[in-house]
Image (cartoon, rainbow, N blue to C red; front, top):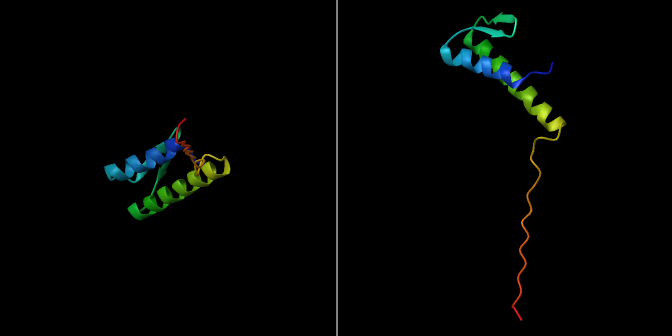
Length: 73
């Protein structure tokens, strides 16, 4: 399943508030334990990472710095 950053934000906000109920748009999910919520957060983070790798957004393109010098004249 393709997750979104908004879903991850909602999960993290629920964890920060100590809640076990999370609402995404029109769906509500209630987790039994905080650990179950943490597992869901890790799963969403991993999926978002995989999506960014697949689309070429991560890892970022390597930067190249070229330095040229001359003695003058």
